[in-house]
Length: 391
Image 1 (cartoon, helix red, strand yellow):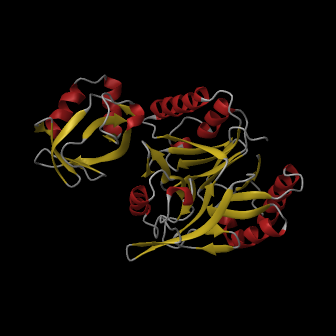
Image 2 (tube, rainbow, N blue to C red):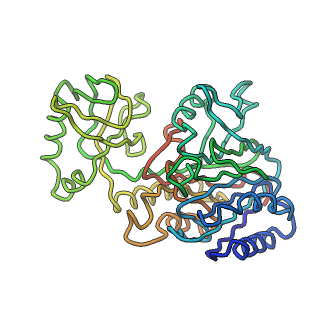
Image 3 (cartoon, one colour):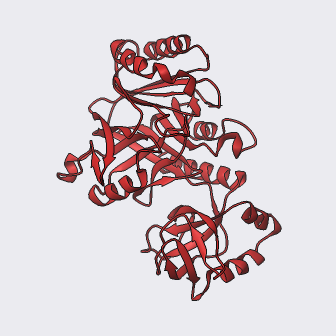
């Protein structure tokens, strides 16, 4: 396996592309990679189709996917809100790749079949989608049911906040809706790290009455009354964090004796009603275990560092050759006191491996064996040499 990347912050698109394409080609020593991934800021969007064709014409890679982004990651930097073009390429000997154009119309997913035996299905799917025309939550829910075990990682394009304003690249075609994807199957170890950046407060609670997304009772008591009791027992600092924004974690698997930080799917608390109910950004049913969470820079930093270190220690001799990073556009300097937080944390854990990515309007990644759309999350896929393979 070989992975290389390059980043340019030149505002002139032609110069920026010539720079990164030349350096990546040099890094590949004239051998085409199997997959290239491109992330570009909005001012470069008009050249995305040309870039896709050039990647293949130059022999940089056999396949390419990419999208436009508000902020772009590359070469150890998170370039926020300004011109950036990031190119990342990886050679994956023996791995079967297939690029896809995905759409979701009339309740049907087009472009990806979940039929066949598990051995016929891709093991990992990299997805870049348009947040206005691709219902990622519905798609992931369906694929969790029809293709269990499939890992889905990626993000929703973020350069534009209006429908059909984003651009998605797959090989030599550009689209303004739906999603693009690359499936990977074969001898490569792809590890995922999904940091939701939250810390639990209080204790786990069982939902005893709920109506769609409104929790009415927790442990047989009015939900708002329980929340007030938890709030009164917090430190002044945590009380202030609750005032700034409260979250709730839903346990993904109820079949365990105790629940840790990574066992919850984090969703927002939207507000309360006059009847003492708590509205959340998820459908909640009675019998579910939940726990309130808070998020701030310290919690997000601790969570990401801890998860990356756990992954590193789990396989200390593993050879990680590169990574793709999909961070929420609410992270970066909107959350942390300085720039480059997430990519620097990744490099501290695994060394200066080639990294590319972008700040997304929704991050895709697995938690507890199921794929979800997240917010305020860093979703990472590590490209690791398969056991027994040679570099």
